[in-house]
Length: 387
Ligand code: PLP
Image (cartoon, rainbow, N blue to C red; front, side, top):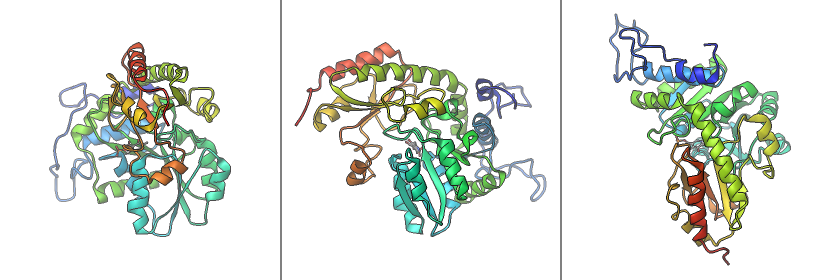
């Protein structure tokens, strides 16, 4: 469909229903489909293999990412697993050092057992990426902006290096969403989403998806979607599709709020450091300004307080809920070392620059003044500096 982003979000893959004219694409809540004769179907055979609501979501996601083929999964990690299932024992993967803890755990605790090899490098440094390649490197894994330090990798440059060595590039686009950046158009081969986050946007679904540019690669990933079976239910696909319809308006507000929150925090005497790519002092500000249309709505901070006081801060906010996850209309905050990144060994976390006192904010779409007032009252109650 040849339309612009906000139109595609509402129309792509979701025509009015044929029989009744229903304007909202239905939930096909069925596990199997009647066949005309053995092996001859009306396009669908079994619910794990395919489902019309799931297909609507997959087509919509592909349209939003600028082409290719959407493949939906039961979670972001299930989608990540499918990318690794295209590899064989002995293959080597290069991934960013700053990475969602669950993906790091999937790599090191699950797939390493089956003979895959992993190097974690600073992918904001292209020379380090270049040095990390081995003859066996088959996959380069970019997460940009990264979780939790909001580092930004130059997708076009990293993809060109990988392409020259025949490696497939996966770009985790969960933090940015296709509204802010479209990695397939910059040279990535596969885009990954935890649809649990901004795409759904309302904290009521766990889901994941891939969008692959090349039809053969998409066919291979679709094989693992069915063969390994980590598929989303039709109702979850419906909810993600419903969330996507407002992605553009939500992201505009999310990003506007986050910019104001980051600016407030950067000027607060009890805040030692703010990690937000939209701030001119962020190490990757220039790459983010070039690569993304907006700077996103995730902000990480380090307080000048002791570790205990920093942790206490996360319990003092009234609008920001202390919870895992991100990307919801409702503001959330978390303490990555004990929550989202607890599965990363403490020494690895420290080596990767994740301080024990780091706090990650997912800025929602409430009124920005209320969010700032909430953070201000919580900061007022923490002791200024610790031992
Ligand atoms: N990728 C990123 C960047 C994430 O933040 C997450 C979850 O927090 C995932 C992948 C995994 O997604 P899920 O929790 O849906 O399995």
